[in-house]
Length: 398
Image 1 (cartoon, helix red, strand yellow):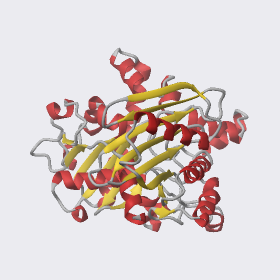
Image 2 (cartoon, rainbow, N blue to C red):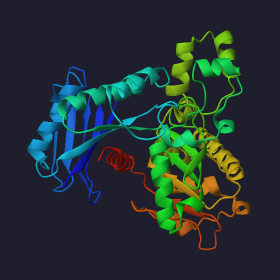
Image 3 (cartoon, rainbow, N blue to C red):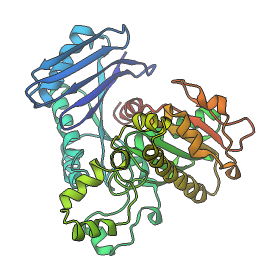
Image 4 (cartoon, rainbow, N blue to C red):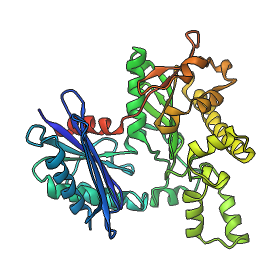
């Protein structure tokens, strides 16, 4: 049997999963952190036996050393690479620009193109590329595949991705809407069709990927026609630390009146805004708990959060010309029943009716939370971006 090793690499950490390709079981998973610091750490879990191993004071000077620590963990805890050899290594890459509309086998030219696109994702693409290069040193005899967050949204029509700025500037600096979370949106929308036992080609679906980062997508017949994130992951919904939609003049005003530099504005919007800026905490669980205890600031922040999602649900219903399903996914979407209920409250005129008991059910399985009479199916489907990366990697490389 053969497997796919899926790698999600950041600047100082990387996550991985080993997935059996025949039955799509997760065989192992792990995380290497604090790469390049005085003390690194790693944790590895054998999903077959349940055995785990970790080290909180490891030497991990670079990503190559991190991959060696991963190899050692497989040797110590298993499962054995002899029994489950990786036939392909799939890598999450955040930004593929307009150059990549599908998963792509990594060549020297592809590496260079990923590097060239770093100006569009300076916090992500360089780290993704570092992980690819380190992994290729360790797994030199198998194909490596880049799976791009932006690829799924390349089906958006020009009127959906074009910003109304001077066309020559937009073309020169590649300024347009790209969207993110595409791997999750693709996986979840396809799973919704399977759950509903309906052809994907006939479904009009809104997927709400709600985690620390959050985005909405309008998916018509399996094709993304609109999504809330734009040139970067900053646009759209309110997030844990990101502002989402904002009048651009706010930045000009703060630059002129408050003297904030562009770097300070960048930091503010990406790392100090969203729920964190509104409440002091970027963790939805903390904010929800505070609101439940009567904290008016927390409740006001949640109202802003919900309002933004509802605005997109209404807009995307119009863009789709109808609606068959709304799907909640990711950490907040899958686990926060109160948020789901309040987001969709009062939308019966759109054909959406929530079943309170179904909505309160906690499960790791895909499930329906709408009533039997609801014209629009409302689903909760756990996302599995690693499995989707494994599938796409195998499809193009094996």
